[in-house]
Image (tube, rainbow, N blue to C red; front, side, top):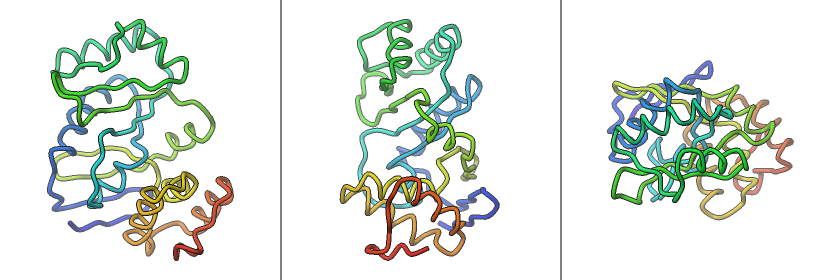
Length: 199
């Protein structure tokens, strides 16, 4: 897979689309006409070839009015998805407004699933505003900016998260906005020095 990153856009030409990628793209095709979104967390590293499993894909969206969420809910159900939470559309919307995540999978499958959340704070809003377009063969999607993703993964601090941060650093370090990454590290109060992430 050839990856080119410039001006806030990533082109991943010749990428083999995995079953997980196809699942995410199918979901995004239904989500995008209803609301802007941004994909965050572990799937970002997996998208670019990191070899590790994941059960869920985290997606953030702005707060939707109940009627707009119901439209999304119905469109997903018609397209072969189901909600894993034991709630109707009104109950699911209430969960989201209470800053809880809801999970969506293909019918009669639990893994993989989407964890969908409303934006909860200024960091989430910044991630959506600054989202990065990724062009894939025959498709595109939007992810958290790599600079924010690296800093946030260091902030989370588990071995898996640090490995995700290192993986993204190794792939993108020549093209990253290093001053932007440094600024994000200051926001999250983290340092990458001990891992070789030096800005």
